[in-house]
Amino acid sequence: MRSFARARSGTWERLHGWVPLASRQCTGKMPVAPHEHGARTIRSRVAVAVTLIALAAPAQAAAPAGSQPEALPSNETKVAEKTGPPPGERKWRSLFDGKALGRWKVLDEFDYSRHGKVDVRDGRIVLEAGNPATGVRWTGPFPKIDYEVTLEAMRVEGDDFFCALTFPVGDAALTLVLGGWGGSIVGLSMIDGEMAVENETCLYKDFDQKRWYRLRLRVTRAKVEAWIDKHQVVELATEGRKLTVSWEMEPPLPFGAATWRTTGALRDLRVRPIGPTRAKP
Image 1 (cartoon, rainbow, N blue to C red):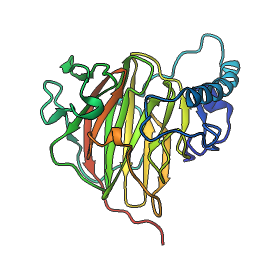
Image 2: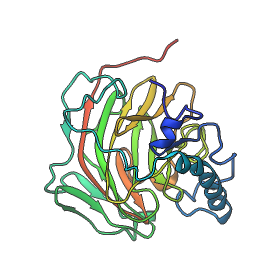
Image 3: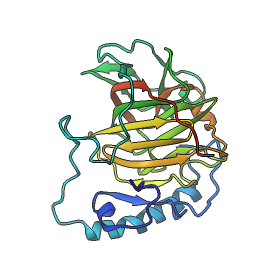
């Protein structure tokens, strides 16, 4: 399936709220300091805002009047319809029982020292807005490569990222950002030293408040892939690429989630190992 991150245009994608930015329309290589993952400079914020407005306008014009956000697929829906990842080989393991944090540790160092309240409510982990960040790290066993993760995430309040998922890629690591840089950027940080808003995985997506989004992440030796609901948003071949995280995302290592001046919620967090794959020679 063609990834939305690789798409350049398309009425269907725009009607459903996706505007691809893979051609570097996202930033035009604008400078973003490594320490400003969430606290953007005036220059970068204006540049992103201008780009997003320009890209969103055609989408608004094309959308039919009274159109509603796309509904989450039900459990009976074939995830696939050949849009989701191929089935794994082993059973899912739950990382959250819906009752207690368990092996999730609340982060309290660096940008997380003034974190918001983290607790379990109604079967979800709620991360209240921090100043600037709130996050949790998984302290139990977790695979380094050849695995899939699935979870549901919601932006409850705020206008920045409501789920920045940091995860291992072998001995390296990446962060998948949902709703960063003013609320609408999706992508991987950092690739060859570039943040999500700068590299080829960057795309624009409108996220509704208080709506659950299903995230699925697949990490193999050959590539990193991600889906939001049933739409593929990332397909990155990792061979020859330098994969790192920004220093703000070091506390959640090796696996964790964070929000930035935003209240977010997580539920149904699961992981499973998959059969090993190899990059093409």
